[in-house]
Image (cartoon, rainbow, N blue to C red):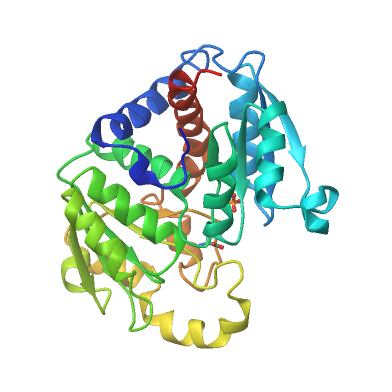
Length: 303
Ligand code: CP
Ligand code: NVA
């Protein structure tokens, strides 16, 4: 089984992974060593602080070995096909964790690989992030249902897409506040609604965004979007999370961010450091939910 998109999980498996994340946070040995004797390749084409390091530690905790793959050192950099690379690496490795620009690359790789392939972020999705996001909300609220989540900013990015789909799987309500041109794709909205989620679009960080359990933002300029920097800063400015927003909230939401943050852009420094902020816990939870994810994937996978 691969994990390219969060919708590869259903409500039961998603909830079980989040709950196992909480358990392994309390007791790091809780999930045992299901990766004993297994070698997992880590292939990142983009920078990463949280995802790569938390995966490496997670694999070690579960008894596995990490093998680093550098694109420039593989024959793929000289034109060897994805098909041959995926087939050959599957003979050595027991799984791959891949961060790439193109989701299509990931899909092609997974199609030809005989071992689990995990999406560590693509242009379209960041499914591992959404597991940690829901664990963080669960820790704060004690539940995985009857939640109202607001996402403010670039609604058309990987993190927003996965959060929306995860809200669909858990049948929660998500309000996406974004300017025109930065709303989530209609296909993702439709998919989340079909799963049972309630998705509302707003063009202001106001109204229904003021009565939520959690408010989330991500960078305005995702990796690869640097050329659009000035237009994005201008358009997205009204969607900044700041103390003015928090003061208007009917009840105080927890403040979330996948990180890295550009303080002064999508979130102010004071809100980032406020008692409502859960951003560092959220980053920590990447480790626990990825351990739970690996445990789940490898309980299904027999070589
Ligand atoms: N949130 C996240 O994926 O962070 P990194 O880019 O540091 O992995
Ligand atoms: N949307 C951001 C997430 C980084 C973890 C990006 O793709 O750069």
